[in-house]
Length: 133
Image (cartoon, rainbow, N blue to C red):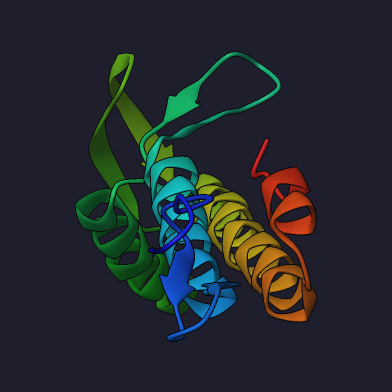
């Protein structure tokens, strides 16, 4: 008769329950990846209170505008942001693109750092201590 299963992360090896740490690590990596995506695409607020969308479509549109702005310093666009319409000149477009890019990269850098901690963990307790926030 098998003893009671200690957790969902244990497997029976024929004689005893063994922790399946790889399964737990995979689930933790998926949760961290989801948290990164939510943070990445959740937008940013600039110091002046302007809210900038950072969903994938907004990132793409802003980077496209930045390509034009880099080539033509007189370039300007009417931009529909989270707070409504604004006209952005080339300099502002480039600043916004840089801010969004830095935000997105910081999210990926954080995910990488947490993933490395997950992979190095040797216990359930260590894995439970790893959190996005």
